[in-house]
Image (cartoon, rainbow, N blue to C red; front, side, top):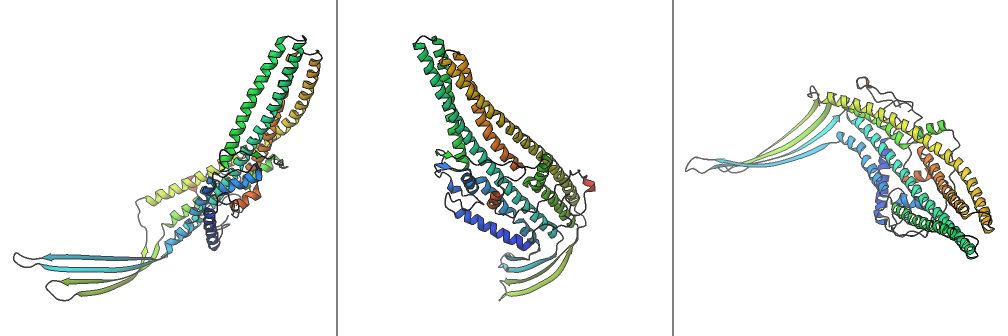
Length: 494
């Protein structure tokens, strides 16, 4: 980025964008409850709607992006931030002021009537700034601030979508655990029934029945716990989607999320180019540079023109009639800051420190991004291999339990061996169900870290033109305040 306005939309484009955002906010406020046609904002009145009997992940995304309050708040922040460029331009707009005053006074000696004087004044003044060196940097800083707000909005949309996916997969996980625990309960009941049958014919002692009953009761308790956990998971998902917390619905197994075929270094570079939080921090570095330029511009002279006209009216109690006088003035003034008590010098030091801080913020966030991408990538690879092992483990556990149960029927194995095999089977199935959905969620979290998660849906929901992505920026070395660049900062990679 070699100039102050490089890579930024022009003022007409920003005006069109501002009006479109305001129009979108009005439509969102007027839309009926539960309407998912507008996905760029939320309708607070839509909360408490009845959930569908079957809910897909795509429906959950659309519902959340249309009704989530955090997205609506982020949209309002965009609308507010987009007013800043126009506010900077108002420094060059004319000012019209009017004054109106009246007074009365009198005097007199003892025994003599007072001499009363009445008067009134009206005046109209028009001033027009002709040159204000701070307008340009303030306008560009306003554009950059609006761009930061739009990037925050996009990040909010993406975070909301990830929260929906997390809650959705938690419901799926709890549903799978309920199914596993129901099957475990059935097998425990069969084992107890078999032990009772063999006890009735004197093949085993009562200890086998009691041990089987302990396993059965544990299975019942585990099933109740998993069913209650499922109810809680559904309630949390319903709250995120602004459905009635008491809604009952089933979630549908979504298609698997394909892992990116890129290498870990490529994913880290991709994250640095695409992540909205990193782009926002890069934009903040440039905006701080414009704030510094604005402070420096305040040292320069400013020029303004003014015209004023007024009329004075007066009357005296000892004379007849009213005296009136009209006057006008016009002039051109040049304001030159000569001494400000050190205030501007302190502002310069502050702005230079803010630039150094913004660079350090980006540098820290970039390292955090690398760590997050690495952690998410390793987790997906770990879970991918874990699933292979768990599937084989479940198959072996099923076969082992079946063989031991048959041997127990024939009196060739002990009850404790069968129950241990049943516990191992239940554990393997539970671990497989948990890891399966952890893997699907971890795949999506990796996509979030690189800003690839539901990209087309988020682009549509945000209803914003994505800023030009910056190439991967190298590590920025902190710049001492005394050596901060005099003009607009050049961000590495832009």
